[in-house]
Amino acid sequence: MTAIYTTDPKQGDSVTLSELSTRYGLNVSTLSRRHASGKRGEALVAGADAAARVAELKAAARACAARKEDVIRASTYALMRPLKHIASASNMLGGAP
Image: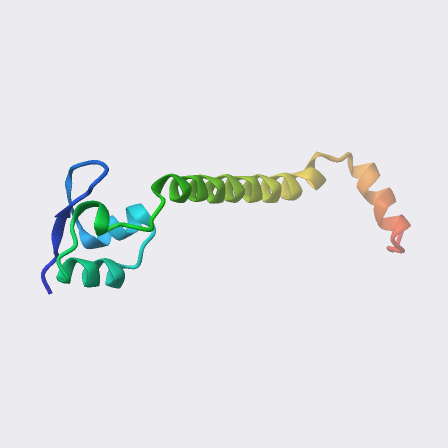
């Protein structure tokens, strides 16, 4: 199957429909159907809000970074505690002395 190239209406560069679908958050089949029916430019990507898509991707990246930091913090927190404090905590939880 040959890639279909078209012009990105916002940036003006030539891209594949697959790349265009990633940029605008649209399904490739939607873009392919629109392209086959003769739509080009803004009509091809109508209904896609690129700014909202970028904001959504940035929010997802921030959330992922926050989760990674939480995992790192949780895994190193116990290592930063004094050993006697860790021992006393196990006694409080009913651990063997």
